[in-house]
Image (cartoon, rainbow, N blue to C red):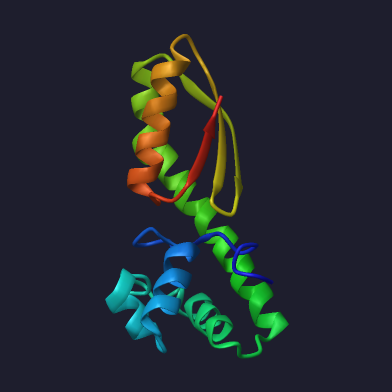
Length: 147
């Protein structure tokens, strides 16, 4: 799978997405997870993203990637990203939306793309709140669609 097809949040703890890691690995000729952590902070917290970072480094080097490992990494990434977004919504965003009389009706996550459907009287103000909070709490590289 190409790096473009794998645009996703890799380091959920520190909010670092795959495009940043690919760019740093290519520009800085990074060879280890520790190198990536020094360059972009990814991998510097819980360590759950280390296999994904190693996969990215292998791809940059042109090394073969075990398809089973790639699937395992993708599933872990999807699950953890969804949990991170849910945590931000429930912990920081939903209570603030309530003060505007707004609520979240639906959420869909696909890689770095997050779609949030809102309901309430002041959706415009709520839209900005959701976008700003998700980028701040989860990852600045999220592509957020709020409607």
